[in-house]
Image (cartoon, rainbow, N blue to C red; front, side, top):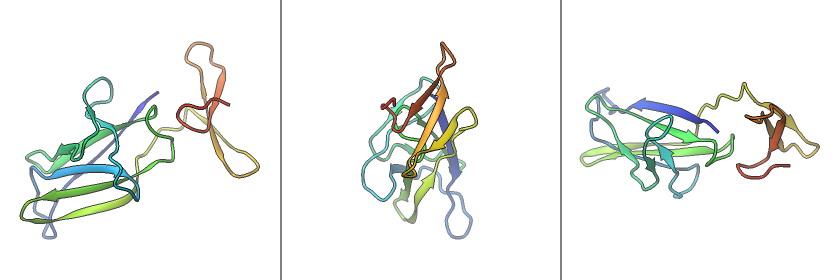
Length: 133
């Protein structure tokens, strides 16, 4: 499994940096809180919104783990701070490094991601984060 990073800088409509803004991450199109991490390995699990805040430069970053979500999962990112109108982006795609995977589609169009087993190198096909077919 691997974690994939996303980041951003929060600014108001005039381009001013918004420090200490709440960053809430949900599954796309829902109010279901997403589980994200504050580091590529180890670190803290962040599962309750708001999962983090922007720093003094208005910046934030978080990591999404393959073990938690399928490759095509999208997210909704909500930015908020008292006294600021806030912002929201839905259907945010967290870039995944799929170069190590063989991606195939079956007859009904379902994508299968095949990755090499870490011990044997054999290809494993997964349609979800837990199903091996």
